[in-house]
Length: 374
Image (cartoon, rainbow, N blue to C red; front, top):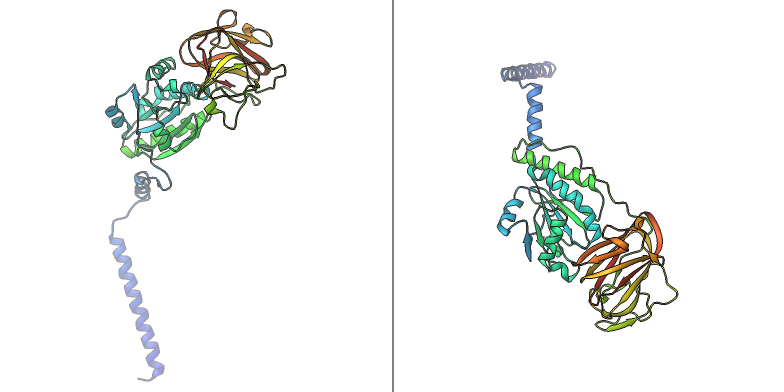
């Protein structure tokens, strides 16, 4: 056959074969059952809900190790509760004013979400020795209306397991144990609660639960700290490295009884002592029959952490404190009765103010640890 005829013939046969194959393919497709758009959408939704959120980059919450005591729970009971729950770990200590201010929110979340899959665990990591006493912690737990489990981290093993350096600090782990949220200090309450709600919804979907999660947020007035305020003042010689604000000329003398005097010139944000005080690691203890502490400060709130049974007289700018400035622990005639180791609020005003505070003590054995200001 000549090439002029052969080439067109081969091309025509190829085209005809292609048409036949295409026709057969379309016929096969028509014979298959059709999948509606609705079915595709439903399948896609199911796939998305069943697909796990990537936990790459998230750490798992560490084991709660080295616990010194349990409040509102037992060891075996606590481990069972952690399983399949969203867990808020609150690292706190009861003499920390910043921690105390967060507790109304945390206890409200416990009441609101504990039946929906939230477990709150208070990790009580003490700053001072007396905070290691479980009886003291129990008093604080009752005082603040805490009903969720609290564990005592007296040796800071949990503190170190979380690689923590702050009071207070909140970690939230999802129902699989991955830490999904981390907040240092006060504030961020709405953000924190929204995370709780989101992780509870995620838990319910993952476990196939129909439980509904609340959308409204807890409404509690936040304490607004003044911008300019005196920093925390420490009386124990172990705590003052890099932040020594003892203005008395005698200074710190570890483990010695020191006769202190108050100079005529005083500086803001420093404290001054009169009388004989024993220098201890975490505090100072009054040795003489009487003594006083003078603090020129800035702020709207003054708190002290003390131990020992004593009556304190409070003076502001050389006069007995006025009732309009009474902290919640001040009684008649501007006196404060301190009886159990803890935090006492002695001054409270509506705005930040500068004053000179003086505390008169007439009870040997009175022990003071810190001043904190708001």
